[in-house]
Amino acid sequence: MTILLVAPAMIASGSVLFLEDFETGLKPVWHKVEFKGETEYRITKEETNSFLQGHARSTASGLAVKLDSVPAKNAVLSWKWKIDQVPPGASENDIKTFDHTARLFVAFKTLIGPPRSINYVWANQGGTGSTFHHPSSGRSRFIVLESGNENAGKWMNEKRDITKDWKLLFGDEATPAIVGVGFMTDSDGTKTDVTGSYDDIEVRAE
Image 1 (tube, rainbow, N blue to C red):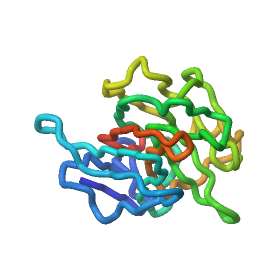
Image 2: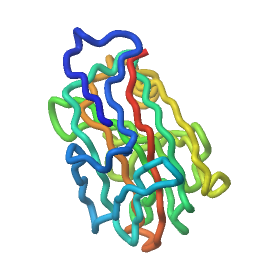
Image 3: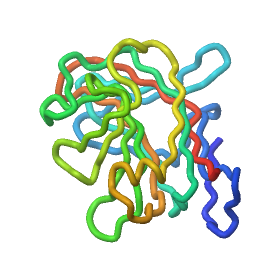
Image 4: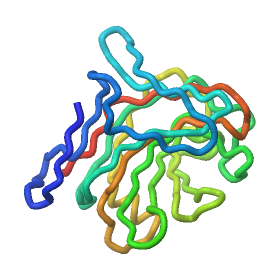
């Protein structure tokens, strides 16, 4: 199910601000984020568990849900994901081969210009814990949580403090409200076939 709490005054420690487990299918709150071609996203099952699988065939598109200015203070993001492989020949710094089998992003409220975003990425070569900017936009910044094919085929659990990550990437200013969460599997630059899977995405006030 998906839970959205839009009244900041009601948010207490332990409150679930957003939750998606894909057990009831892909709901209409998820909207396409189009770039080049269309990655296929579908609900898949392993035994009794449902999850979202993205299959990119030389394509680049994502899915995102809009949130109603969810406060980022004390917000923790958790999820699990897995990949079949990183895109052969992909990189973190060349826009021509800037492909990633799995990326989950958080977009923040912005008064001018496109939203700034934190992107948690399963990198191709970058070291775990390293950071980088999108090759064509400093408003989109990345933290490497997994890298390479060592853990390909395994579900990996992630948990991140959004405020700490904002300060790491953008500085010490107050973290803006969260206005969106999404994910993207892409391989348009490398012209390869890759599959990324996502499940149990949750934003919680702690």
